Image (cartoon, rainbow, N blue to C red; front, side, top):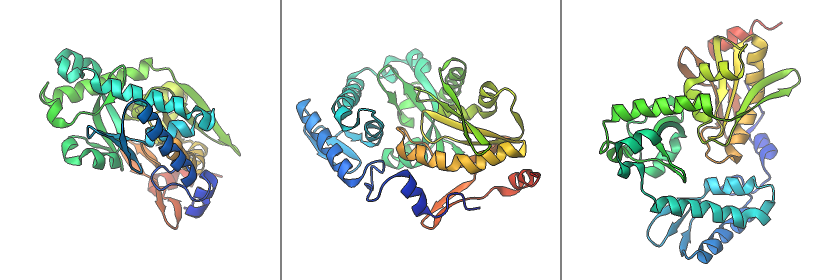
Length: 317
């Protein structure tokens, strides 16, 4: 099932031509300006850096990714006039976190209080070293579950060898799961209905970096934000970036159609523009099993419903 036509049509709608290959929310000219401002601002803060397409390296050998900062600058309502402050705030936070005492160093109690399970883009692990996070299980194709430490200044993603110095991995995995589940009951979110031509789905947004991770508890999350939802046939959902979770019940068929027709493009654009990208894909959850529905190729973007959704959609009049 073709969902947005050919790939070039998606890219034309989402962003202008000649986009930067590494920071795809920017044009090449914009990304050149962005990297130059990062270099200049860091120099003013006392740091000499090597600037690479997707990161900067300070003279102590530390690597600092640019994707999330670029996404925040891209979404800054003040435009390029606001970039200097955004860059300053971003790096001040990162440098302060680097000098702070990690919960792992503070001991077991601090670690258990701050540890959470978080959903992350599996491709990010290639930069971090996949073998150091081999414990991370797959939640969905292209999405992994990892343990992170939520501190006042940053989110730490410690490797397995550092975690197990504090406690058995099973203990940390259990507590991380519990702490993230508790956020479902306490996190402030905005719940919006996305509608077009009698089709609809629900979009949940928030400042928390764990909004997308609430897909770990998808039936509970949907029941909280759409209490009348019929979950008997499963849930169509997407998690474009850390601060967004989209969903549509697969029953009745009209609800499933809304998820299939509207959500894929929305998810693709959200992943392209948002900070903390998780996945550009749309998925189908049924009885605890997650199936990827969308596929992006040079020829275009397509959605394969699979037998269950085809059966449901077949009931449409």
